[in-house]
Length: 288
Image (cartoon, rainbow, N blue to C red):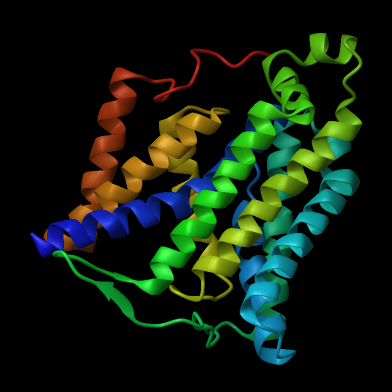
């Protein structure tokens, strides 16, 4: 019973981490129609920025995480403005551009930090025990921060004028433009928010897992699966799918092992997509 409860709690914490990284991915696709292959690169950059600030410059971990989030957001804004914006209607071009940017990111961090994982540890250790469960304090802290960030994104998207404009662009771009909503103002900020979320996830999660130049590849693959499962462009669908993936991954890994756990997750995703090819909360076809 203790292992069941503990595994469930770990699955929920995984779900919040996956949700935070996947929200940014689906946000960019839903609003801009861009599949951002550089998303995993911003994840590792968030981790390396936080590592550099906390270890090399001696900054406390919390300010380091905040600055890493800001830095990846600003970098995303610049990249969208300089490289993505002019090709946003060409989906193949944006995929190639973002893939190239990811390669540049991974090559850059390899040159600076080396190919081996860096010694980046979460500043708080120990576990919370009692009532038939135990959960590492690091997981609880990351869960709380990720949940707060997800809540902030929901408020921004569904409760503010900027969020209404973003959803208008996602629903019907030409009509939104006719109403005076300018893509040149909306797209860079949306891209910056998404990359900041990826950087925040990297700064929070890599101290618990591993920080190396190739860490973003697995994250990108997991985000892609979650976004497809939830429905391309659906923020709520991405969050729901992230929790499903987190729980399935936690339970199957504990009780069946890593390889069989990955197989079980793949089978579950395939079964859901057979019933709902558009994803859990996706629409049948994305509007042009």
